[in-house]
Amino acid sequence: QVRVVESGGGLVQPGGSLRLSCVASGLRFSSYAMGWFRQAPGKEREFVAAISGSGGSTYDANSVKGRFTISRDNARNTVYLQMNSLKPKDTAVYLCAAKASRYLRGSYLENGYDNWGQGTQVTVSS
Image (cartoon, rainbow, N blue to C red; front, top):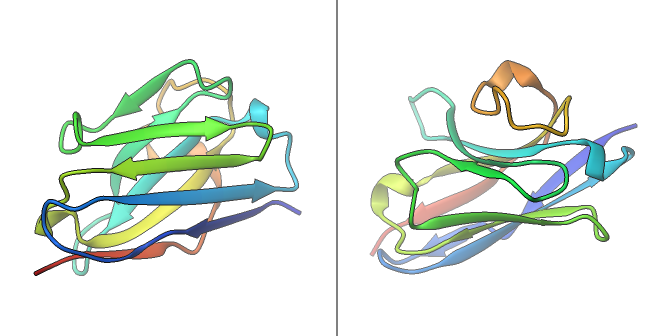
């Protein structure tokens, strides 16, 4: 049984940083591209970033480019999202998901992901 669990969310001031972690179990981790999405209250789920199964390729949404960095440690079955220069508009529940392919093609699309975590809340506020 595949399980995806996020952690690391919290309250941070504007301009601050957070690192989210996501551990996936029950799958051959390196065979899955991994993605981060976010959903703010009253808004649709939004793609944030994705990383290929090997970790050699990444893809970021324009809204986070230059501020957020996705990475992974296949030995630990873990993917990370380092978030810097956080803004109030980054406030959302952040969800991690495992894609049914090790490649990034279509990684910005929700329907390409088979397994989702429950999410972790990130609040950016002074």
